[in-house]
Length: 127
Image 1: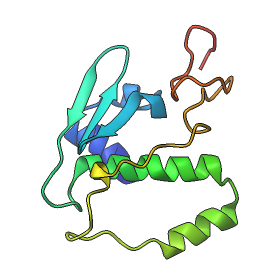
Image 2: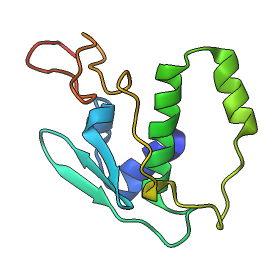
Image 3: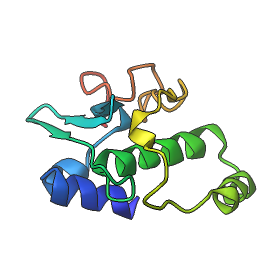
């Protein structure tokens, strides 16, 4: 998560005040580009040749970890998955180019759990 925050704040230029209220529905990774959309602005990160230095890959990793935490909330399950994960390197495949979808549970509003593509339903919830 730290890497994703650094990428979003330093590479994409998303202000910290926007990062504090960012939801999974505000972030998309499609065809190698990560797009962050808020009511105020939209930021887009383009991929780098090296997957270790690729901003959209860092965002895709964060989305996968978030999806894991939501769908398998057991600490033991998460620890096992992280233990088995191979460390990234320059030759690693670009995660920003995969088409793995997030689970529906991850895309629900965090306060009322309605399906809203991960965006807090700001008109009905306080967030």
